[in-house]
Image 1: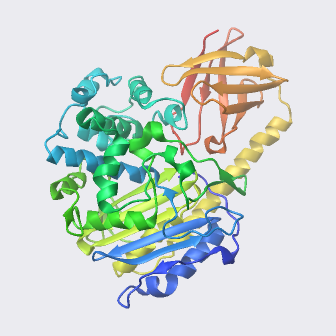
Image 2 (image 1 turned 180 degrees about the horizontal axis):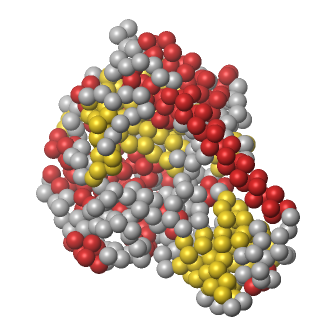
Length: 509
């Protein structure tokens, strides 16, 4: 999660569309849900939210709140499309588990059996990696490592897989969990090698169509032509703005699906009924079991208020013990959208929350509130708790950024003249970068992100305050290394939301 800034949304923008609440539903659902969401929309500056609850094979809540685009009166309904980000991963893992049960591949197959060109910097790991390793984030990478290179970039899927081979994994193979979007892309690209059908067509034909998910889009390329779709939003220096949709088709098996609570209710009903939907076994029961089999250890568990004893990862799903139940879940974050999906198989309970703002906690807190309500646990007001933490983090970030901007205003002298920092740079993972001096301003231009730049302003010496033209990449301090009066390299850091790992670009001219 990133930092958050907040201010009010008028209450008239909150509207519920459909509700199927039953008399036996928890009081929070029957009496408090609308008020809770309305208050969070105002407090967290969220344009729109859609929520669905499935219990015992039936939809008991399905509602839309707020608007698709801030500043309009175009209301969210149950068929409004939201990008679901990493909730895409469960579809990819399920598809590969289906192929495993059809004996068209084995989840224990080496990746190189299907993608011979697949390599990792750790040669032995690249040769030994199996499909399960890709789907359970255990190839040795740090969480999000490499994502700056891929995210919103012009790289193809094939080029992303090739770039993986240049990343120096900080952890030994299979020893630690590290969330890896590119690994899920590689896993998804095994599907066309096996079936002769693209990932997007296979997912559509084998999952979307049998479930009647007629409005769900597999690719972001389909979004401009779609109807009833929520706009993406971000908050930049306290102001809520509409931002362009994130094109994620080069990472499609990890993050590209766009759907509605109405369509996702069918996916949830099927998952809770061990692969059956209506009278049809859409997914083999054994394939559902594969996705819920623990592969990686995330932690010892625990929760903010209630009991939890372990936190594991299956294939495309997180697995937790919570108050004596197994909870199967995942979240999704993509430019302008946050989502959550939670299953409690023993209770036949499923929860979906979709939001069209990248900076909110409601996607998680509402999910948790509904979960506690159905488990008979006390009301905790998670939204207030996490919103307070977000405001504190946002305040700290604003203070820090102001300090840097105040330093910039003093026009502190650099060690070298401005043109001394200009030139060509290279990073083994990312590729080429150019620092260009134009009209007295230094700008950093990136080979795989055409149209995006980072403005560099002196903090004195060899340090610069960098502001990315794309607000999602945020701001940072870039230090240059100077030896014998010449630049040797520069360290580039983007927002943690995109990648934690810094990049060292060496000067090449």
